[in-house]
Image 1 (tube, rainbow, N blue to C red):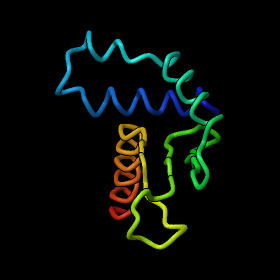
Image 2: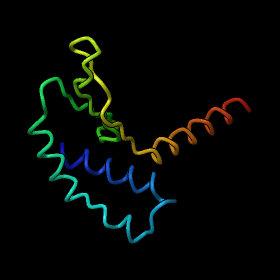
Image 3: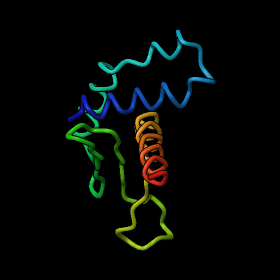
Length: 108
């Protein structure tokens, strides 16, 4: 699972930062390094933390990391979203296809 999450993370960051970083900088984002980071992070999840994945057709396309809130002024057991990454370009492509199908169906 760490490898699948790492693929989403790297793909999402490359897509998100494509207008901010050079191609050379984007190329330095490594699935292998990110996999190792996620493997360690998943093995050491703190109490109250969880990682959720989104799948499409059996393939991980997104993930969310939830952790216990460190804020002292919130009720015990309150969580916060630490990160949320989705392979945006895949969702956009899927939505475009869905819209095209609806338009064609509307034409009869």
